Length: 577
Image (tube, rainbow, N blue to C red; front, side, top):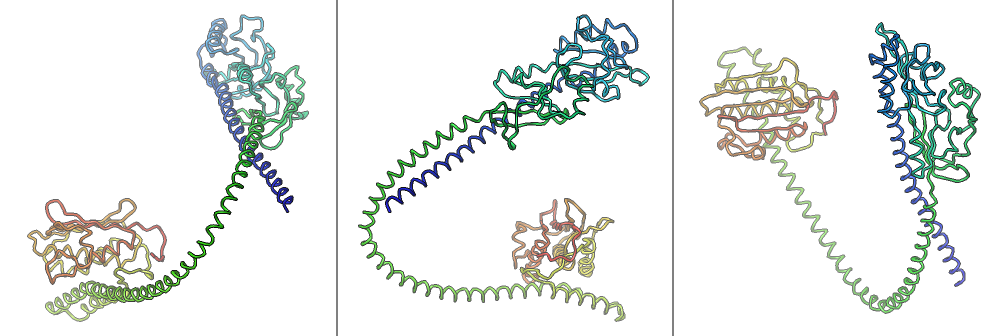
């Protein structure tokens, strides 16, 4: 048994060591990869900056008057000197002007043995691209100097709009190689054919990443891009996304594209340090684990002795705890029965309170239609109107009373109400129609202004009419004791919401806030003139419509109530809950 336990412990330790090693190796390798990505990004930015540093120069030179005049036949000595000065100041290898047939007529190196003057470069891709009107770019070994460089070319236009020649510059990019080599990096830049153009290792230059096809070799030969180079394959083999073997050594391999040039920059980094750090960390973990195991064994022996001594005392305490638990269980059951009775009593009290609020709300809501019906009957009796004229009005008010009793859900959920597109103008006009007798009887001057276009909001028309009826009725009541009885109603659209403002010239809100007035049974009117439910009901309805209601004292006198309802979003027959 002891032997098997020791073997199991040894196997566990070995598995743990292997796991620590691989986890740490993965972590340290990911760190090395992150560093490599940072270096690759830096070198990619450097290459792009170098390639684009003079990309605009040919465009500018192509529009230089000296270049245009020389291309049309002017003497070349002045332009040769200008080109030489430009090249010296900017650090370019060469600047030269070719005729439309590709023969160079002026160059910055016109006075040197390896001058470009008189050379025909019509076979170069950069010339062929520029002569068609697009900027030409090309990397290759110079046909005259035998030195590699990056060529940029643009067409020179004559005054009549035609192309009289091509202006080109040559950049020396070997400084990039020197920088990579000085930093001890392994980097190379390959073109779309997989030919290495620049490299920190001179042996890699002009090697290929794979075997070239006959068509590729023919095109390279026609362009004289790499004359005298065998273009042999590079000794490398990619292994997965982030590894490659090059010159017999496995390295981290990352690459980044240069899309505009269809080139790719390859970066290699040595991750042997990650392996060393992983072995060191594994050794430290195993040493610490061994020490911890020994300490744990000593403490385990001590704990076992202490546990044996505590077991008897704990057994006695457990018996006492069981006795106390039995008493607590019985006390808890008694408390739960009392809580259940209390909850039942609270539910009954809540239902009675809700019933009282609903009764008061229905009384308030039906008061306005009843008053309107009484006014219509009195007006018909005074004017001796026939029943055929009065009955439709009474029937409409009765329908409204029926709708109120069916729709009114003060301080309750509106599970069965349907929200549709509603025109706020219709809502306000319906409320004013209901209150017309009150407005006329009170001698109130109504100033109604509404836009010609519909104000479409999402809501329940009857509930919104309740809101406007309550607010307008409160405004009319506030004007009873006022010398100036004017009621201003405005409406419109703003911030994706339809709005209505009701401004009266009454006594105002005083010191009461909108929150105070929204409380049930709170009113600014004298006793017997209202129960203070109107604004509480209106606030609840506006809240159901995801809107906002606000109130303030107007400048001078009176109060201003504003209701905002979100505009319709195209959805109809939806449940607002």
